[in-house]
Each structure stands twice: as C-alpha cells, then as structure tokens.
Image (cartoon, rainbow, N blue to C red; front, side, top):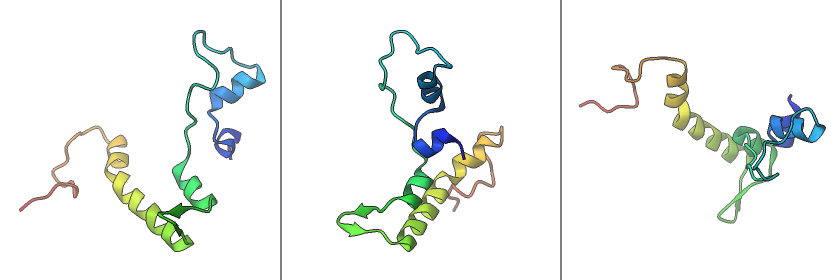
Length: 93
C-alpha cells in the first residue's frame, strides 16, 4: 500500500515535505484538499448517518450502490466510443 493512500495525503505533498520536490510558487501550503479513497474510508471508519450507526452490511450495501453508480463511467474510461447502442444505462421502450 502506498504511504500517500494510507495517510490520505497527495503523493506530491509528501514529496515536497520530504524535500524531493519544490513547492510551486504562489501556492499556499495546505491549500489543496486531500483526495480520499471513499472505499477505504467506508470500510475503515465507524460511520453514522442521520444518527444511525452503519453496520458492516450497511457499508457493503453503500459500496455496492456506489459501484453501480460509477460503473458506466468506469466502463467509458476503458473504451474510446462515447455512445454505446447496448448501453444498459439508457432506457428503450
């Protein structure tokens, strides 16, 4: 596992802190928001939604729903054609 993922800190920020990269001029330190791996965040934290503590089953269900939500986008990233006639995301009557 990458250190940056474990710390939820961008790789370039860690390299700057270690002195391997120079900080870009005109950019304040800490102004960029860290990118958080939502799947890991969901699995590794105790979460509450509207006062209800999420169980492992709830977290699994949420993860599956997010997978479905982003499935089309992930599929498009691997292909060059924008519109697919067999795309299940479009309704046909």
